[in-house]
Image (tube, rainbow, N blue to C red; front, side):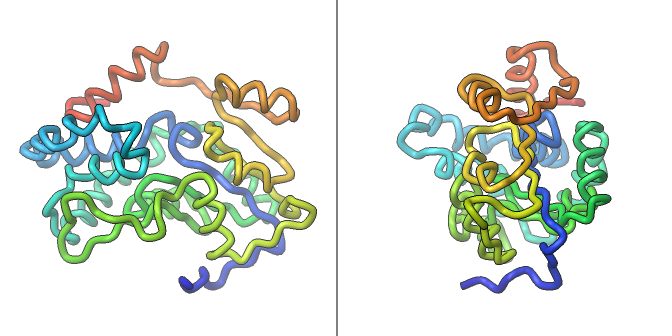
Length: 251
């Protein structure tokens, strides 16, 4: 069993925050890919590897496709990855983040709660983002690689999403739910994939919820936040995402 996070006290309560499209309007995996491709344009060749797998998305699932997508880092030295992460965080944090949600992070800290960033995005940059934003602890998907990144890197204990995300929090923080919920707790997310986490929280804030997630939030009386997005509609988001995937976004 992995060693638990040290020097962490949850007795004052805790606030759990998702990252992508909760604190920031973008998918940070695409944003980081865009950053890397603009720094090393030749890496756009990863598209020759990634695109043929797209028709298999329902077979490979989210975790499989994420491993294949990370082929844009193939062969990169660990030192270079860390250098690019530092530049990425300096460039986009906190500028691209929702100001209203960062105020929520500050308010939760002021209440004495442990503020936790928990994301399905790679921990190699999720943790530095959390540190830059003042989170007490930050977790993401643990990508396995040694001196260099492999073609389709493995994930330690899987994709940090859904039930896996909750298991990681329990493992690291030693959380114990009383009556099905965590005492003095709050959860923030935009996605129904985070329902296992949100259902542990006494207070829930849903961000830009849609579809069945919106209906569920209404039934349960959850608080809803809709900070202004940097695009007009889903087509605008899709076009920006496509440009990020190709390293052509200049935001």
